[in-house]
Image (cartoon, rainbow, N blue to C red; front, side, top):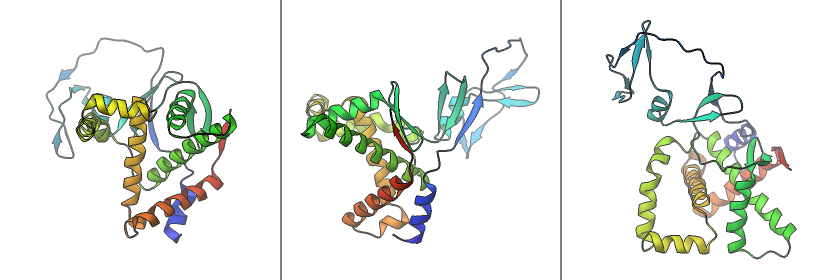
Length: 241
């Protein structure tokens, strides 16, 4: 493993960067006079289509619309009443948190989706063996996401926006939507799980295209990523409830 790889492995334990925009439960409402849609707004030279208005010589634009134009997403935390502009727009499983992997919250919904898929495609000697395999697979995929993040790759808004088009292409490759859904069900894939795994595969392809990987053949790429995951896991903080 070369020096540059070791450097980023050491840094991959850092969490993803997000911009937090706090909101307040006790909002104060007042009537104000504004001028609507008189200013042309562009983002990197591309016209911004969303509404905007001017108040006290300051231009205001919709948070979500601007974020999406920048290929970023917006998440809202009900508990802290906070809106966050995030680089990572990947699918998040719902449910109660049952563990953390290097700062990533794993929910019972995520565990159940992995369990359904892995039970459909594998045979386990015991429930303990199955549980260990599910947790290991979740951990590995979390690490892949974090390694991709360390290299500057994310599931951005453009990927999310084009996902339905990708699905249509996948349907065509598999004999139509009904036939594909049948095959997916046989493999234990829920719609959410399939979307999640497609995102992981996309991030892996991004990693394999990076400078440290692109010069290697496929087997060596796979081995190098496995080695990096092993290194990251040594330093990671993992807790299962």
